[in-house]
Image (cartoon, rainbow over all chains, first blue to last red; front, side, top):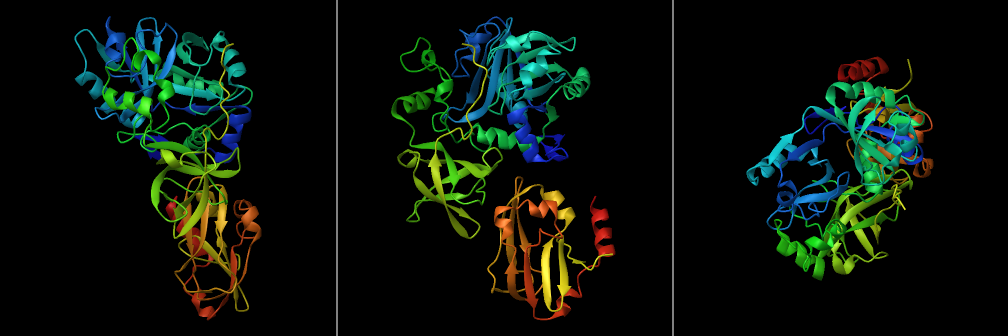
Length: 352
Length: 125
C-alpha cells in the first residue's frame, strides 16, 4: 500500500503488476478509483457556462454522452484533464484526485449565479476494464453492454442505482461505475466473483495507460503544457476552433487555437528505448551530437510489449517516427527511437 | 540456518574459498516486484566495498546494488540479461548476480548471519 493523493492505495495485489496488466488486456480487471473527484454541476445555464472553462462542445452534448476535456489556464496550459458526461440536465466532471479541491475552487471562483457545484463525496467509483468487461457487467447490470464508447446512463448494477459510462484509462473496452460509497465495497466484492475479473492496483493502472498513450496529469500534461503540445487537439471540436460557431471563449484560447492552426513548437511523442533498460520520467533526451532537446515525462516497462516504453516532449522538427535520440540514464546514454502513440492499439467499443 | 551472510541493504553473500557470490534476498525481490532489467558489471573489474556495481529495474522502480566486499569480479550471471525474472523466482539460487575473488575474507565479518537478518526484516514490517 502507498499513500496517493490522501488515499491509501495498493500498488499491486499478490499476483504482481505484470499478471494484473495482462489480465486487463486479455480478460477483465477491477480498479477502485474512488479517489477521483466526481463533481456535479447543475443550473439552467450550465452548458453555456462550462464552455467558458472547457474547449468542448457542451451546449451540443446530448443526454447520455461523455467527452474527454480539460480545464485550461490563461496561458493555454492544462489545469486538469477530466471526463464530462451529461445525465438528464446534470453534468458530472470526473477529475484527478490530486486536483479535485483546486478544481472545485477554480470552478467556484468562475461560477455565475444559478450554477451549483458539488464535490460528490458520497459517491465512489469503480472501473471495470478489458475485453470481458461487457459480458461480466451485463450479467449483473442489464443494459450496460448496450452503451457505446463514451456513452453514459443511469443503470442498476446489482439492483443499486449507478451512473455507468463506457470509458476508462487502459485503452481497452470497459466501464466506470459511480455508486454510493455505502454500497461500493459490496459491489466490488460481487464484481470480483464474475468470470475473468481480477483486482488491479495502481502499478498496472500506470503501465496500462502508458501503453495506451494516455496522459497522466502532473507528468505528461500540466499548467506548462498546452493541449496541442500534448497532441490532444482531437478533444477540441470544430465548433470551438477558429471559424466555429462558438470559437474560443475559454482560458488560453488565443494560444491554443493558434497552435491548432500553426502547430506547437514541441510535441508529445512515444519513445522506444533500443535496449532493455527502462527510461523513466525526467530522463533528458539528447540528439546524437549531444544537444539537449527534451525530457521523458513518463516511462517504464510495457508488459504487453515486454519492452521498455516512454513518452516525452521533443521539438516538432524531431517528432517524426523513426528518428533516433539518446536518453541519459544514470551515467550512460541509451539510444532510443521516436515513435507514434499509442504503443498498444485502443480497442474501444465503438458503435457502427 | 543457511551459509549465507546478509547486508542491511538486503544483499546476500556466500563465501566459498576466497570467492563470494552476491545476490539480493527474497525480501528485497518481493519489495521490488517483478524485475525487468538487470545491468551487471564486467568480469575482471576491480570493485570496492560500497561501490554501485549492479543496477536493477523492476516494473515499479530502479535500484542500485552496492558491493559489500573489495575484490575482483570473476564471473557474472549473464543469464539475467534475458531472464531477469530469475531473481524473483530464485533469488538465492539461479538469481545470483556476480562472483568476486575477495581481497580479504574478513570483509564478510561485519555482515549479518541469517538470524540477525530475519530480526532486521521483521522489524521493518
